Length: 119
Image (cartoon, rainbow, N blue to C red):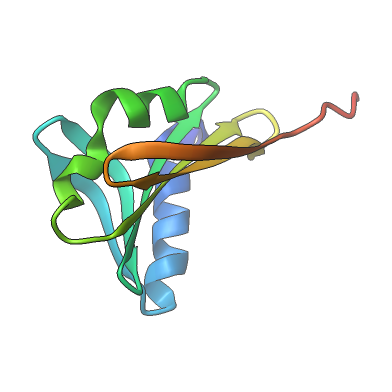
């Protein structure tokens, strides 16, 4: 597909393939009663929930609004919400942020925003 990099599924599948090749427990399009999680990673008793966006903002807002982590509330002590935003023009990550959730409450935010370098 010529324009595959314009769809979040393209980036999700690359990250899925990488994590799965390492033997990680990873689920793509993980269904919840609120919708679908783009990617879920279970690692050492912790759950990492990923949302990907391409040429769009609001990945973290969607993770919070949809409360995807509630699916795993009884299974894990630690949740991390991970929002990754890509640019189809740059074919790269332009924004990345994560928040740790404990007992259903968001506890802190860390983020990275790519600084434009000009062309």
